[in-house]
Image: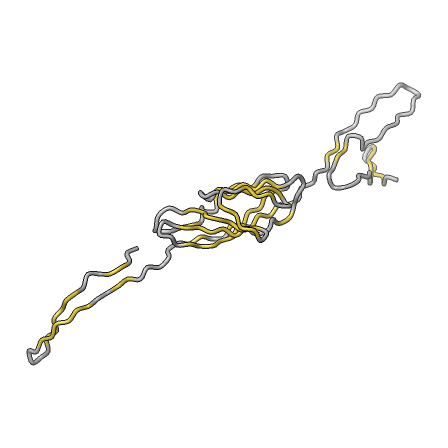
Length: 184
């Protein structure tokens, strides 16, 4: 990873007639950024916290890597800031670790997060973190057990112990002794 001036090289050239000429060779190696950081794509299930480190895929020969800032939804923040988005809360730290806590029942794609990485030589690279949240069924329904006295009508609602965040519930079918019937 050397860069800079190479010590001057002096040399002498002799031709077939015995004539000689002295000269010098000057070499300078121009530095280039060795920093590379791949984009990150993360997928989690609904109501699950996304964690990881954006520097896991980064490399440089020029010293330690640091996240200096990030941009999401058109706003730029310092690394270490916690940002409240419509979709949830995001923190991206200087060491590259991140946490995204989605809002209850959020699913979809979080706005793309662009972040700037700096190495020990001051080189910078901009990469992205894309977080996708897959939906899961929030439907739960506990089994019902009813006891009645002989010659008494059993009444109730099988949806009393059912819950979902995705809208109203309806019974569409039921099965008795292996025979399935449409509800209604």
